[in-house]
Length: 478
Ligand code: NAD
Image (cartoon, rainbow, N blue to C red; front, side):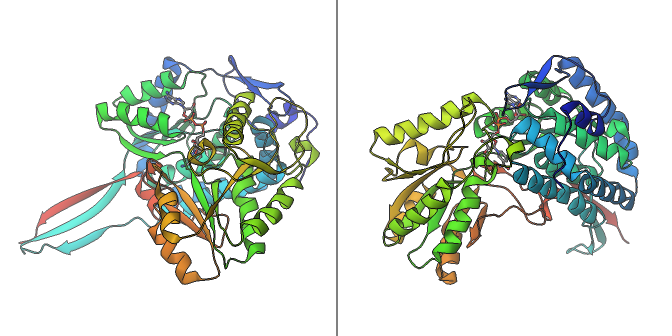
């Protein structure tokens, strides 16, 4: 599985389609070296992508669902066959560890498989009307050309989670990947076309000017859907722009996941869960545990065990086999460090820390103790390998802290008392809650947030519905 690449050029030749060159530089965060240059798209590229998607839409929408399902299943198989190469590509442009990259490829491919399975299970209804004399047919149709805008932290999964259900529903897509990670997007587009998707049904438009490309799409009357994953501030702006033409939108935005440890929790399980909830992707996940609320009775022991596991993490480039890679950029490191410095200035202490190599993009995995509950590192999305721990004593004060935020994506609860854990989970304002588990993401279940963490769900049964419109036909039955 862990093929060592001879050079990026070999890898890129194996995975990427022919694509337009240009001035957008893709760098390896581990070395700062430019590994490729790609199209730096502008308004004309955005419009050309929609031209293609609009041309391809009627024929693709009219294909039998079984055909669309078969194409997506082949795409799943191709991703699986190429998983080692795809993981190398993700490491190259994103910097995450090889284990995280391989896990991402598996998770991402699953959205093609799940969408293939869902493609043939479209809902519908045929009923006599309550007042009699008529029959009602309720059916669905694809929403149309869909613009997919994705972040860099999961360069493959954030695309397949959208493109899978969109194509399954009969939509065609234009994709604007994060400017940091366009190569994986190209590799996925090639896989889809090799699997039998008409080339015009998927176009990737990388750009250094996201507002130009996405703005052009939102003004284009042929674009009927915007599915966005990214930060809450950008999501808010795009919602305002989408309002102009009342574009159908799905929003997967920022998170600030609490991780609760009760006094009766199995601490081995809680530490194992904390390690994955916090350090998967180096903490650069919207579902990452952002704030740890540990019952005062066990906070000392939990902090020692979790801290020891954190201090033992290895940090370095993916090629070294390290568990934690660099952050995406030097700017990201500065942002994480500013949160830590603010907490330290307010009385927090570094409890445990792993060594990290020199380099602009590395940040040492860190556990903070004695953190004030209102410190920025608790209230803001960290997006890095830092775990602030706060004590709690009563359920009432815990709930106030859990829900005292405008974000509500994921949450985690560890307790031996499942009844208490479920009660707390139901009282937590979050779209997803892991109970005695540090991972919630699964293509088969609805992923998404409440409050300012988003609108709509991806995956599960809801995933396909996001790309369908309901149509109701009222039929005279006399
Ligand atoms: P970001 O909002 O900066 O960028 C996301 C995408 O939007 C990128 O493609 C970017 O180029 C584009 N973009 C940026 N400004 C834009 C503008 N003015 N107009 C149009 N497009 C614009 O987010 P990021 O830094 O890439 O990703 C990190 C954020 O994403 C975090 O907040 C994280 O929680 C969130 N995220 C959420 C989920 C989820 O499913 N809820 C998943 C992954 C990441």
